[in-house]
Image (cartoon, one colour):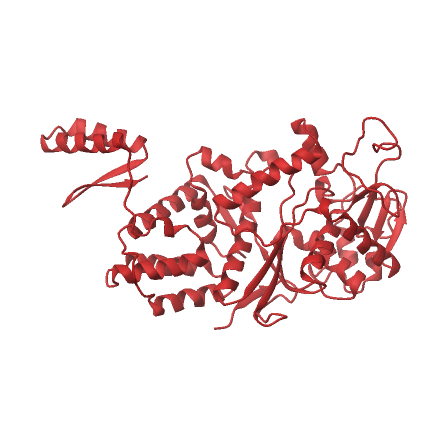
Length: 468
């Protein structure tokens, strides 16, 4: 069964063919670790995980690389302004290095909570300065870079293919360029490869450094531009050309366009054959932004009582190329649906079953059709609700499906609810109240049980407990 993916570079849904048979090089743009990842970021990382799992489902050996941006990403994604890590350091009263480590650790916890497979490589920009400098030197040698008083820039006019990813020509990009023209840029679309520190501000020449992260280079003390890290590190781990590059749709016109240009300018090669991008997350039908206070982090969802995997389920409910509207009502609906599935799979027999090949083939077909997770979820629901299937078959089929969806259902298959003694005592007291027809007391005890995280349901064989 062929795997089809929508390639931003060609604007087509194409059959996937790897460079090397049986193996896939996958690069995903990772977090800028100056603050917590928000749910828009987390959608991108969940999408990359689903892609990786689908590739594995198809028998590929995947080398997944995701960068950690811990320097060089300036506020506003432009070529001037404050570095996000330096800004985060001032905000939190820590060093830039401490900020990078703190939010990298927070990001890794979020990944684990969302059941996102850890990438094979998680290179940090600060650990690959040498490779970035070497690539800039190659670009300069090949005539694609020039120096100014504040750094080194890529000359976009020298690359005929610049704009191929976004579909914009240089003049179209310049029409949309923001006000605040750099007087030494040859073209408004040119971008920084290396930024020089303010003269006299770095630690070797002045007390009380304004920049905490800076390095010696052939052009002076400074730091790399944001885009160069991904070109240099993808090359270091995956070679000059690899199979798939992923990221959010917001990366297309600037970051990924510039990555593509740098790799072609330095090595004369196409950075990646397939470029895949997920759409935005909207909030209550509008824009998500920190200024609006709605760029929610995962821990903020948890503080409101939501399971992180309910967010993963919510994301899977929409195709990755469709925008998704986040509301707390929608997240609650996702959580309830996930709880319902967990409740049903508890009744399955986890031992010795065979996968229902018909259902699994339909699931594979959905995932191989450009990662159609809404249809894949529908097959999951059909599986758990199909009364004609033996419980062993259900267990085996759900287990295989969830290797791709990653909803953590293995932890629930065939496992009874383990309730504390306090809850069990309340259930017993409620059952006694029901038998004595003390309905108000029965309802009160039911509500008390719910506050402790359990729902009691009255069945033919007596009360049954489910987790809220």
